[in-house]
Length: 169
Image 1 (cartoon, rainbow, N blue to C red):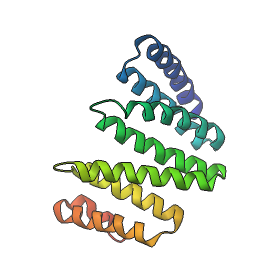
Image 2: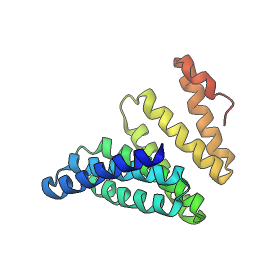
Image 3: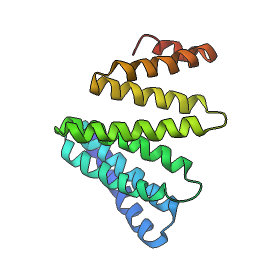
């Protein structure tokens, strides 16, 4: 029930807005961004793409500020994931150019996180592969699809759970 979920997420959004204003901490800002994304997710599911773009935009601005702070690896990942959601909403809202820019930014951010990790986690590799796959689907880009496939091939050699992604790209 999207109406019930929207009601509760809207309440959480208002509480998180107040806390972020009062506390002015990275965690409170992150909580606010997450609430904005959740409300944006519901708007997108209800086909309210302009509202989804508005909510994801607001979250992206918050994350863009958080990634400037020291120790921001988690916020950089959240920023990239927010950019992916924003790209998808922009695509559905008809802003193809902006969607493309957001996908590219997300890819760059996730690649940088993945390549800079001393021992990149399976989760980081899979996240990058998904970002490449989503961007490839949007842009009909075979090179990005191959990058996703290469990552999934490597992951399936280490973990059989990733075999289901083979051939997807």
